[in-house]
Length: 214
Image (tube, rainbow, N blue to C red; front, side, top):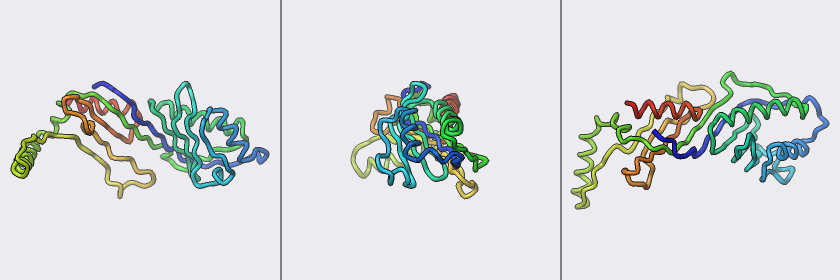
């Protein structure tokens, strides 16, 4: 399995912010935040800073571009086209800076307070989908019906699969389904696949390697 691109890594971190030092205004905090992480886009009006969702875009941390940093009433979302490890470091740095420099306090509110999403483009051996060979008779049936209807034969082959938890059994943040599917719009011979997972980047890659070994 070869990693071709990290299409997006995102991290949801849940916590509340308290203010021990009222001297720093919300506007000053936003200015200092934008300067520290070199965000090129951010809120311009006070109304944007007091909205339910405050967005900063195109920042920098550890030499990596932070595509988006979103602030909500109960936490934050950080996105980058990079390994999710940098997102963990960004959040840790942000929390430490808030408490050390801005006079704020980070109040942890959830036992499970981080949720990850990883979206990758990978090159994999076609054998990665042999776990779906039990559907070969169904694929042949579909192929035959389409041929009868259109007069053209296009063999149906495994395209991908999805696995997901029963969300009714999960409290709080819901993990996205795990997906592995051929890259849409490309010939199967490219062996390029898209995969999404509720995992850190390295864990996601570990799962894909295990699937290919099957």
